[in-house]
Length: 149
Image (cartoon, rainbow, N blue to C red; front, side):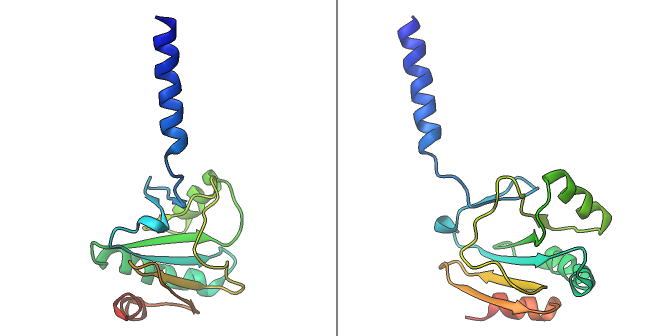
């Protein structure tokens, strides 16, 4: 009986250890692995609370999120390191209605971290990256970015 239990436990450990770790986990429990986009376009917006243009574009990002096509995901990323609970507080404080990348575990993106803000990237279903789109984005510019080839 002990051997059987040990074999079952070892099998569970091996299966979980072999599962690929997601590149990004969001506060809405979505997980993204760039190698398996499954026909989705992912819009990644870097922002910071101290960045006035970032805060000004939040209503546009909320609007985009509420009208985006089903195959599009919008993920916000805090430029500043913070705990997941600090991120939740920031989201509530600024009325952010779209998902945010959790900081723990740290997200891994298929592009370099931007040097200036606000910065938006579009990862197409084929894995190509458009961006960074610098400066404040609005509904029109975001829709144009996801629809361009």
